[in-house]
Image (cartoon, rainbow, N blue to C red):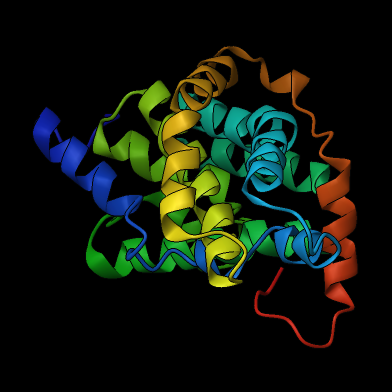
Length: 232
């Protein structure tokens, strides 16, 4: 059976909880290269940050992570097929910093979900906790949200919104973007995020890709930084 919850309101409430910034999923300890990107652009203002965030989502996160999230939603709750998608996604994370960010956040999400009662008896989550699956956050999020009973588009939309909010949160905490400016950026781009979610749901998994090269390079440079605020 696909859903643990049959009441739409309950499913929505759990979806909101999962994507709440206060939910300890491990996302906010990573900047996904943005700390380094900002460090090399001390004059970058709100407009440049907004453009960079949207480039990251459009050319990096959506065609790779979000597309795998949609595929994982479709195969959930099959632990074997979810593990296959984990392996596929890990193979496209070409640099250590990207793999560490994806897998450490996913494993933390799996731990939290099991601890608070969101994933009791889920075979895939159990395999992540046992170290038998990579536990990329894109796959873990999909498995959990499919269990809640929310749609594929809502699942992917939530993942895209969380990724956007996480990166902007890094800019805010580094003092490069005000909280209100972050919220304005999210409001201005809500239509684009919805469209990216739709495209990710429609994209075949054999067409996944990522061409956000500037952030991959920034992430690699970040690994050698002695003083840093974020893990990646």
